[in-house]
Image (tube, rainbow, N blue to C red; front, side, top):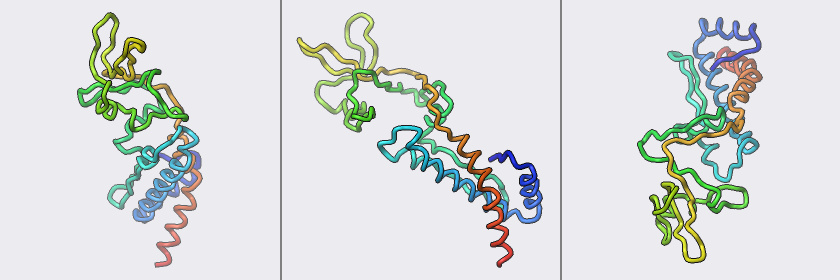
Length: 197
């Protein structure tokens, strides 16, 4: 975690590191906790959260006297969060394809995809299949079988990679802001606690 802005404060923190590593470790751990809490609070203003999965995936690791590094970020389960923050290309790491929803997939009023409309659930239902139907320009994906009156509907396209547009999660910006605002109070709190022992 890097803290920028107040050079004098940074110098004090580094000097304190030599005198009392435990104070620095607890200060950094406190800052990581603060960043996680503020990120969880702000997440609903950045993305449409219908479930708590993404908020619960914000985690932190405490610093200790032997490793004066506190970490905060998203759990591996939410590795797509970096793509939402920065944009970029998501590639399949397992060798399996990524199921990318199409405009024909039914969504709820908020634009989200319900559990019942996710690939694994749809494939348990009659009338849905995965593969490539016969015909020109057919894509490999998850399809809803058609009838004489209603044509085949492509609900998910299977791809080896897919591109995410930058959606401004503001995670890095929030982390820097919280760290700069809270570092002095966190450090003073730990110093006071140390002297009160």
